[in-house]
Image 1 (cartoon, one colour):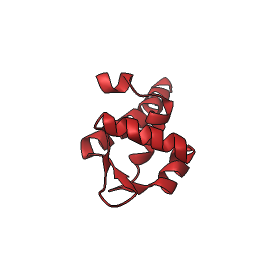
Image 2: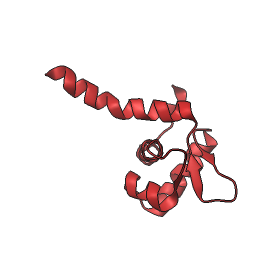
Image 3: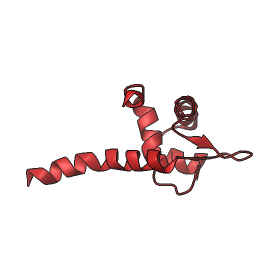
Length: 88
């Protein structure tokens, strides 16, 4: 998709990390899973929000993905594993 081309490595790490949090994750937890510093994470959250790929839960520091975006991110994470498994 077009949005995928606009994602840098930190954006992807944030998107993939958020896919593990159902329904939402907070900043410290997302930082830990994405292995990003808070400033890097916040830049990625701003960018992903501008692309309408994540939602902010009002009056909280929690973020969530739309179910279809979560499914996309999880499929992207599984793709390298599927490729490796096809080798055997």
